[in-house]
Length: 503
Picture (cartoon, rainbow, N blue to C red):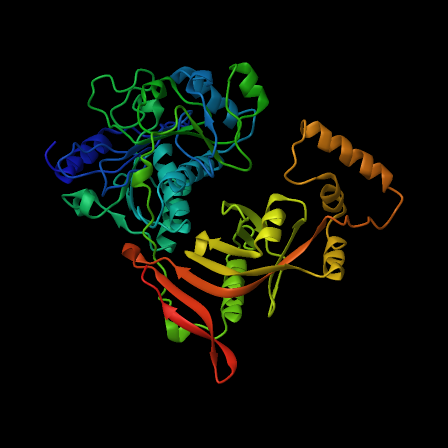
């Protein structure tokens, strides 16, 4: 095709004009996602970023792309694939004796697609999404996905040329209109989609039309070689046979709702979903060019006149922001130490207190870090708050906290953590995990009738007295903010000098 848009318009008009009324069954094709680029044949994908080389994604009912925090990778050879007949029977069973409704399955499908998109394409880089929706259930999936993508921070657009007046679909349209999501006619689409959109979503036809992603056969795949080449495939329930021909980098299984009865009847071998994820990656993991991994940070300006004069006050301010952002363990910090041999080591520990005297954490006094601190009582701390594009570095001298402070904190810990501190001779070699469990069980029995577990002498806290702070905030084009606090004497008083460092 010549331009991405010129022929794509004709394709939409042609396909939609020939589309029969969607059947009652909940048939759906795998949504495809792709990133269109100029001078490339236009193919509809469930999701596709546009600025980069064409990304296509496609979803088919048993075989749609979708995922929420899909961290696992499952071997494609161990996954079951459904024929078109089996996929239709599964849907009939879901919507018949198992009591699922069309709108329930549509919601799960659209959510799976939206979450899989979010898993791979960050809204900060691929924000503008065009969903092309057909007249049937697959189009409904696209409408649902657009709604979720809006709430995920993307800017979706919808092309829905052949609408149906059925209440379910009218309701989905109303929901999108209430969010001010633009609906575009085919004629309103730009001649070059790559200039206006980052991702394309193919939600045109389901597998009842024998086309999974546009141009694909439900079982044989892209037979003529004219179908789309999606970058992402989201399979729902279970992938269909055509998914075996998918060669893009991202294949997800979504739709976490298959009952045991269906899995047993069709002898489905499906992967375990990690945690509370809505999808799981299947097939080979994508080849990653580590050198190409980068983030273009977008943050408010961090200016000298806006910061607190005391770095501890500034730290507390940022720490409150990290707590308010619901970041996981905002008190996690990298602790770097060096012994007399000059060899540094780092590990993550948890901040347990901060006041005018410094930063406090607790550990085993016979550990590697403790030995290094006894030889060289200086250390560096690093807090990194990814969700806020911020990090804080703190350097200074280190000393042990008082026995009273260690004792008080030790007995504030959960009882299991107290026993664990006694069991673990940190940094020493153990024969196996079973040894730790056995020792823990013995201690648990030993102290079962005692309300107070004695703190071991080899366990306690450290306090780093800060001598230098650096507050870092990510900015576009690597022009990051870096403000350094260092102490100096002024009129016999210790004050903090603030300077800006080059990024």
